[in-house]
Image (cartoon, rainbow, N blue to C red; front, top):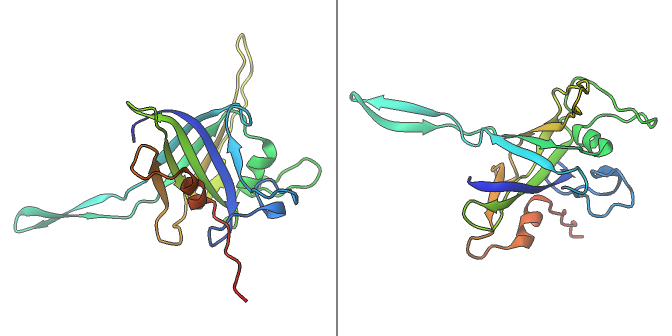
Length: 206
């Protein structure tokens, strides 16, 4: 997808039905929180460095018959995303990773991802190539990991580390992993972007 720049990423925690979690269960862990959505941008994370997507489609397998290539079988991809931010707030990061807090400023390093903590996100490009209209890509749910980090010594220049979060996507309720939105497309609806990935549960009818 041809884009120019990255503007922001919005994150939220969701339940097993991909419904947005708020309050103490949400990404802020705050009983007063009613939105459940954290926006990573130049103001909250010193900017987003990159959004790298892979595994969007499965491998292709050649099918031969009668000495000819007659068909190509395509497997289902297993999308994953590497989201690199300059300074993701510690408590937001650890809630995404499912790290247990000790209420003394510490967070566990268990060596294992918490498969019960699901992260949904949508990224917005600065613009698309050859147009000033942004592109959005979002995924319904995934399991987040931080597999490595490095602290380096300063020298004549400061040495900075970034927060690189890998999210392995899970299938949504319709079997798809996520969706692209092109703001230059006919009938584009900006409000539909956020509601697609951060939808609230419908109260049960009594």
